Length: 221
Length: 209
Image (cartoon, rainbow over all chains, first blue to last red; front, side, top):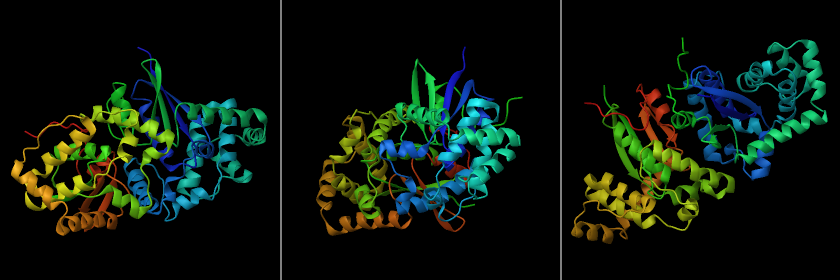
């Protein structure tokens, strides 16, 4: 039987997206799924749906700092929370980073997974900037891209094809009903099904006939 | 070693609270926990924190109808979703129901679990059944709902949830390492288990024999 296509729409500014990303990266070798990474722009999704970052509600923001600490530990993702983490998000634009990731998706998709991970590591583990070109190049090198490829991708970030591709992917997420991230879309029973959040992977497994073994499953041998 | 006290702050108007309630009712016989039901008023929590029902954002509201269907099936809770479910919530006040439940909590707490379940069944399953209270007890509790002690008790419980940091429901508060810890949502029970050294066996665990 064919693998279930599972698409992960994510933005590296989103911490919960990192949790979903790492868990799905583990499960792609265990569940019968075809995992596809869909870099998209969270700012665009927020704008189109009228949604706001969850941390903007003060009591929720306080809770999310604690929730993220515990979830990151449980998911074994080296995400470090700082007290005003959610203000941290609001003061940064991920547009250039997501365009850079898109450029690599278009030209050298084998780097998509490590590159995305390095962006999260820089922004959510080291709490350093990911919006300036020189910092994006550092992330790219960290992910194993050559200086030449990194520079080429950086130049592409301002090109119409890359801008359009990111816009199109974001529109696709919206079409599937996304209003935030991570947005996981699984294709089964002839239809797309949206699962929002890093905490719907167990449910996703149950509807596609797979067993949830926690966020850090033992790899199949 | 003593059991971990786990408090569930809930309102019967909240569908996700029903899921957390049923899962925790199952786990109270499996995990080493002392589960305590804390009927509280979601409207008060929303008002005090400035939060709004999640279904008010249109795209989220559409998603929640689907999410709830799948979650209810997975949690084996007979919650039936209707298309404008979240408008359904907004057109109803649960204040009297929560005061009634509070009155029973104060006088006959052995009925708290079945009574709460029946309120959910009525509101979210559209199946009217019986919780087993005698007509006399029901009448007495109904009279108590407008009494100051019951009103105050509900208010106090709601304030306590707020003190623990709740901004919505279900709000689960587990007491360990000498402190209270808030877990928000019916989807944080696996995480709760992990921090208190218990294994998550899904929302419908086999009972311990």
